[in-house]
Length: 490
Image 1: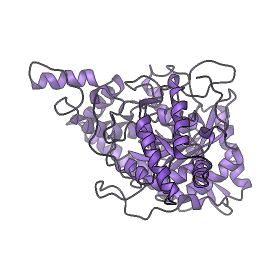
Image 2: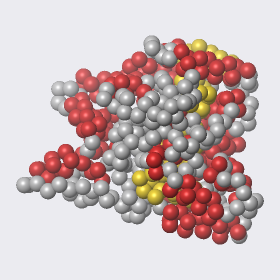
Image 3: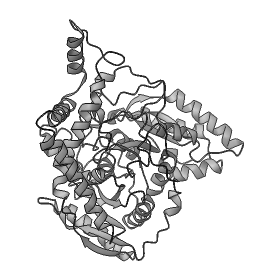
Image 4: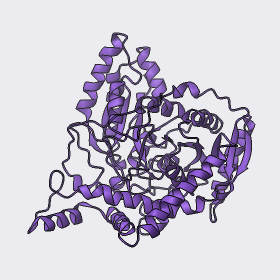
């Protein structure tokens, strides 16, 4: 029998249906792989007993011919998702010991479809970071290394644990979340596929909030087909989340026809930023050539508000974080540091519980919402956000999808940029516009850098038109070829 962890979700699904192996055998293969990958620091909670129990239930259903869409597929869950009875703390010290009595809607949807939970995945604290270096549990390592080097690289963030685990074959797929690029950027850094759906396509209920008007759940997977399979199960309307949209969830896998003839693909001139490495530019041009060869029409477009997206994002997101994180005070759950009185307890708990990046963003957010600054910063940023959305609406009158780089570089060295937060924030330069406009975006592996590190291309779509993104992404994937697993060093 081949190594079962080498199978994609689609291949594992077919193998289980054909009774080539059992869900229990598949799950045991992943449990062994996880135990041998502690160096990556991708998992912060392992749930092998729960996984085997869920796999046994899948085997019973499959034996009766009652298999569900994801029966027996072992997944990793980003620590942002509340999982009933299993530690869920957004990788923050302030939520120490928090075990929810409820399940997030997205994970419940996955369990309803038969998926198996392997454990909780590392992430930047409260999803604030682009390198997975702000986690209370320490940084995640990228399984990819530059050719001939033994230097650890970042996996991207905030869904670094999800991306690293999928790339290292220690889960078949993973849940992730994207507030300003936290699915697409780590996917690009690890040679995986990251799908950020339209805002409202997936319920946010039971996800630990960062910035409520930007956060969106999505999958990280090895292939475009696997992402389509996962999103079909993750997406739903939810009465508990009034921002989730009551639209039918399409069969995304059926959208992978491979035919994009006549499709118009926009190339935004504003994404050719100063200082962009030549290999990122060349990779982008290669993607353009692939789509043109497949029959797409390439159209240059303009998104003039792009230059304001990053500063506007870093006003809106911290403002919402400042509001959302006010609830962590040491009173009802999580960390409590006793003080002389209740105010002293609040202050000591929050000082000890939050990491430096989270404190930085709370301070920024509180400042821009404060009296005298609200109009100058927050209100103005919201107006810019409207203009960014209008840019895309105008562009989509003439094109079906937009192709851009996913990141301004390949994965950088661990610890290299953490000292300069502004430089770190620039990692989101190609991704934040999508969140500001609430649109879907997908990152697809599209070759390697000169150092042998994965590089990704991003496709941006119209609201609730994930099918076009999947179809186009499938053509890019076919042209680029699916990356082999990284050489094992861990």
